[in-house]
Length: 93
Image (cartoon, rainbow, N blue to C red):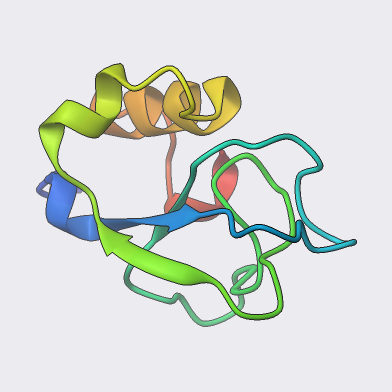
């Protein structure tokens, strides 16, 4: 089976706003979301499994964000696992 090409372009950031959504992470963290929605996948969740805020502020993922202290550690770990090919698909986390 061919391996999927990995790039930062496949992901987006969600930045928290002043009022944290009741269903999202209650910490001021930046979360990652797969840009390409998959059929049968969890389209309303971040890489760490958290729910998306009601009105997310999207931003392109760039390399400096990977060193930002506000980046959710679980999202970063999932991103690294996907980059290394340890997850068989995007929804595995």
